[in-house]
Amino acid sequence: MPNLYKMFFKSIGRKWFIFLVLVILLVFIYEQMVAIWLTAITLILFLLSYIPSLFFKNKLIRFMKGYYMIEDDTIAGEFKRPIRRIRDKMFEISQNQRNRKWVIVFLNKRYIFYHQDTIEKLTDLYNKGYSDKEILELLKENDLRTRAEVTIIKETLIKHGRLGKRAISVKQRQDQLRFSQ
Image 1: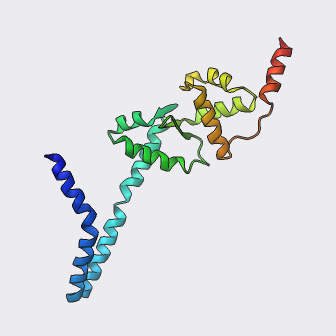
Image 2: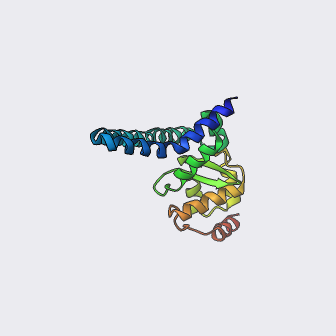
Image 3: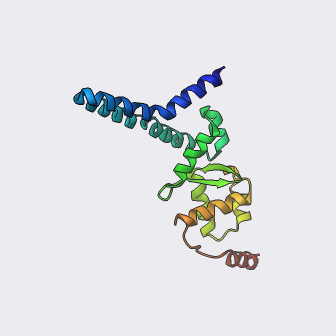
């Protein structure tokens, strides 16, 4: 029975704009000033409908910053929201992360958030010439689990211009380690 109500409101929701335009046109024929007020009120209500979306985005970012690494399905469970909506918001946020200290990546059909501390440590290790395997071993406490995660984070940082050239290459570092032993 609840699905019937949802379907009814969704069908009305799609046609509300046409219905509203017809009502305003009919009112305009008889009372122009009332039609202008109705149009203004409608526009204000329409603009106000975007405010909750902005609040949710900021709340989501604040929540994610509390973790070294968190996945979209965990966030959906915490917020009790559909995973589709969480993924859409994380996609939207990930499109504008050039100047952010944290990173959101898409890996294995899921979005994953990585904290600023994890990114700073990864960047330092990368610049010192550590390989993906070594970086993974050193960042296990930051919840990195696979080399694919390390690789996708590096690719994302490079894509956004946040990862510079290495001070020494992996090969040079390995040669230094061999000579020091």
